[in-house]
Length: 481
Image 1 (cartoon, one colour):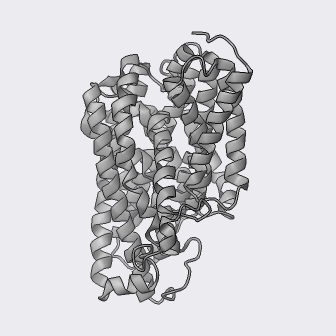
Image 2 (image 1 turned 90 degrees about the horizontal axis):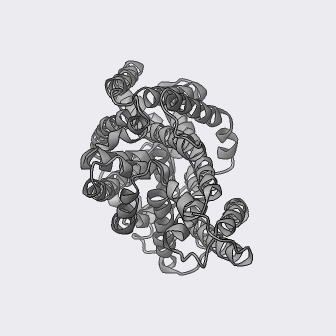
Image 3 (image 1 turned 135 degrees about the vertical axis):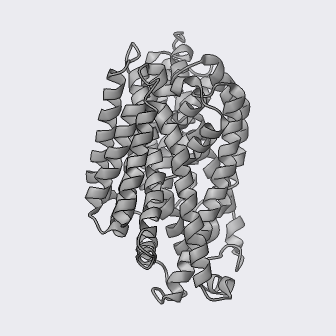
């Protein structure tokens, strides 16, 4: 029954992709949905694009092991939305571009545009592969299939409808997938809450899962940058990561370019902020309930640390106790969360290759062939390269140290191109500085310990900005426009 529910969901997604294929026969239609999307699909699509199976695992795993420290980063969605709506969107809307990196050739030269495109492709390839790998592991635990098989199924289905229907299919399936994700929360949270004995807060407080609120943790307000998570690292580090996501990431910015008007795009980013905070808050509640349920089931001692993979194990145990069909519906929600990220990433990477790495924009069927190739590559990396990395790191650590850290060099290029004076930066300086910044970012993310998790993105941004400014000063050249 569970496999049937999942199969029906996958069939519905593919059918919607087929129905939305009209209009994808041009490059503008395939990559930008004909620039005809409104506030609702834009806002929802931005949210589900950034929400994946990574969140289902990383946040419950983090809260189960350390408490509610991560919740301090949730309000940053609104902090990041203001500068994006106020300064980013009007600027790019006037350019009428396909990718976020086209203006870099006008500001500097084609070499810088190419470098930014390559940085984006590296960043998103790693992120998509991690999301796909985690989705495969979760679905394998629920369906009792092999992780390799479920990873391959997720990747191939997302690749197929992204190739067939283009951006219009992706954004409307995102709306469908958001509904499936919401339905999963509506089933799991009341089910868990009704099965737990009262007083629930006492159980969570005594287990330490309500820190830093109950009991209060004085170190949470400390400025010490070596503490794992503080209020300041959560706010500043997450703001940096979100500015990279919403201001330099083609996956998200491509949604702005699909808008039929600037106002629709601006409303979409604010709608995304509201939905994202609500969704992550529900996920945090689910994480607390899941931990309390595990204590009640005597799967873990109240004060014992939770091992890596604990959240996935307990979720699988919980779903095994549900009536047939319901686990399949929850699995469909997890599948929806990941596929909405993978399909968007595949299309954005294809748009970047077709627009930024070629002299002339690719037209279908060539654009569709690029989309298909990217999807197959991501699936291959998720199956073969990510499992060894996960053996030595939690998903939350991988995301904050490596994935978010890799976005900082790209954000540095966009910030300097958008706001710096031509006397401060030049093409050669940006090219050399951003390359050095990328190498330094990889070294910082992989080798620097201890550092607050959210500060890796900040450190990588500062290093890249300084490297670009220093290289521009040492290697002066005329800007080629």
